[in-house]
Length: 194
Image (cartoon, rainbow, N blue to C red):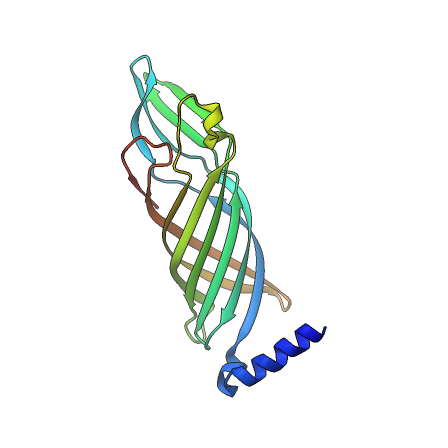
């Protein structure tokens, strides 16, 4: 309790009065859906002359976001999410789908600025992010002789809207994209990911 009181006193002294009134912190737990619209590798040899595109799987996830409002219309957000995305290869040859699917996961961390237009429930997002792949899909012991590039960095862009379901329960819908180039399976060619 003493540390909290000391921190409050230091914040009151350190922050100018105008900024004290504007500085607000909000923590939001959330559920998310992860989509990988673009493959990270194209025409990968699957054996027997069959080639397929490889990509991360669509998956659910959970996360936590905190926001510090720096001004009435500008905030800084930090966000972390864990999604249960695996690895898949799929090719459609003669009406028959072939390929593989391996379970995995990804941890995604980001820091970004949010712009809140006045008198609006919308916000725009721009920042940077980091992604780390894990699980069976990215365990080198499961793939003889394989080495993987399990992490990547990139930019974050997006937008969100907030509506109050009840006076104490807001609903926040956000769409964002992690823009980066990666070669997680180490095939030697980086593909743009969004």
